[in-house]
Image 1 (cartoon, rainbow, N blue to C red):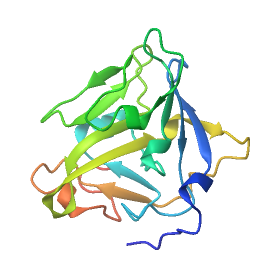
Image 2 (cartoon, rainbow, N blue to C red):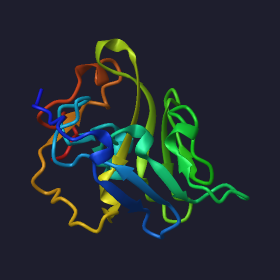
Image 3 (cartoon, one colour):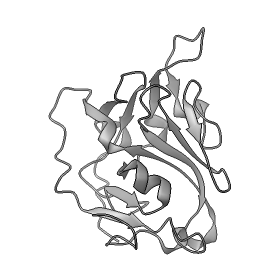
Image 4 (spheres, helix red, strand yellow):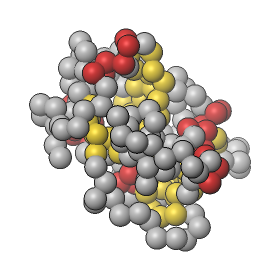
Length: 185
């Protein structure tokens, strides 16, 4: 596993703004795009399962997951942003389209207008064959940092790879250094 930088506390991680293509979905989230996640040993990951591959997702771990705040769309009559803690892994955010398949344990929510997916969340069977709750942010939806500082260059970041297409033991393998079959660089 790659070395991780724990010198910054979670509340010191940069706050990023993100959105879908049409602007219907807007969110903020703290991400560490300079040091590998302790969960995966990588800053960003890709998966070779059919849905992640076809959606072109490149994912990063929120630091912490409760830093995710949905700014829009909001449920009718609501004016306050929605924090992740109000909608844990098993509960979809309101006002968005959702697609699940297989066991329906992973929520692929997306904008009902433009179709862009800003994140993936749910529960999978991870390493050691135990349930693993997760949320990952699609880095392609990041618009910039909240503080106005330049966003880190993502092109030189080494990506880790999940073998999600292999239902029997793909997730249990953990993150690999090279794409698995059908995966892309």
